[in-house]
Amino acid sequence: MAKRDFYETLGVAKGADEKDLKSAFRKLAKQYHPDANPGDGEAEKKFKEINEAYDTLKDPQKRAAYDQFGHAAFEGGGFGGAGGPGFGPEFGSSMSDIFDDLFGEFMGGGRRGAGRRGGVNRGADLRYNMDVTLEEAYSGRTAQIRVPSRVVCDVCSGSGAKPGTSPTTCQTCGGHGKVRASQGFFSIERTCPTCQGRGQIIEDPCTNCAGTGRMVKERTLSVNIPAGVEDGTRIRLANEGEAGLHGGPSGDLYIFLSIKPHSVFQRDGADIFCRVPISMTTAALGGSIEVPTIDGGRTRVKIPDGTQTGKQFRLRAKGMPVLRSNQSGDMYIQVNVETPTSLSKRQREILKEFEELSGDATNPESRGFFSKAKDFWDGLSD
Picture (cartoon, rainbow, N blue to C red):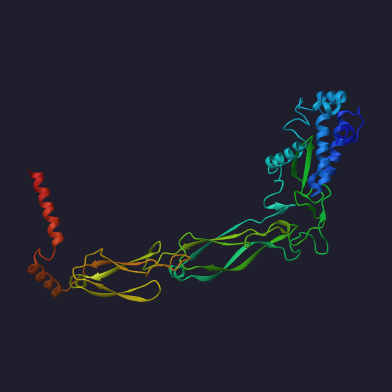
């Protein structure tokens, strides 16, 4: 099918100047732009023809060649122009999309605006720091927290308009929140300066929220703390952050957990450690001790005779639960042999007698250390 005359396509006379060409192009491009005619194949075809015609006629050399030879001047792509290889009619539309992607956010938001469309802004995310005990981290719990934040205005229901009124469509952008500036087949989109990207104008704002659609309020929220959480665990409550401006979607609330220090237990991952002092006689003669467990119970640990300070005893599966699993860590009992204090006269006599009777035989570690120390000193005197 023969191509339409470029002057006819733009609706201008053959002698039209640059100003008339630009004016005609802008008017037709706005009318047939794909964004204004979604799914309309004929409008898209017309838009490509308009771009091709204007691209040729705005260039003095191309226009002179076209005036003399018509469409035949560009067969084979001699000018690399509207019909040339790599610069087909689609070029104008595709370049417009590329420029939107590159400059859209800089000019006030991307073409399809992640997180915002038609001026709808997502609310900010919030952080809440929460302290929990080791017992709560072990068993899990449901906690109630009070969070002050911006919520949807209960007078205007988030619209920002005074009750009985409603926002009106912005006449500058037609409710899109963005305006497009075109130069040839180049097109750059920016935030509407009239409505600031909202797409609507609030002529009579709500007096309760000053037209923002939100207000400050303290809310009570329920938080499920699962068993096995560790220090620094983050819990996300979707859509519980700040409400967006003018009815926009809410952000999220992130709860950061801190585990309080415990008076009896120390935690290392899923394992629990407990330091237990034992008497000198229990360490020497052996026996058993009763120790607490993190679940609130108690268990007996057998102490063999001759136990030294630092000895550990392992209790399997008596530690913390592993988050979101059926496994548990272990509990380690570390004993500390306590030296008697505030001895009576008789107790001192008994210990002296014990020392005289035992000699070095009952203290092998002491005997070994001082033997090495003697060798060290002898080596210095040689």
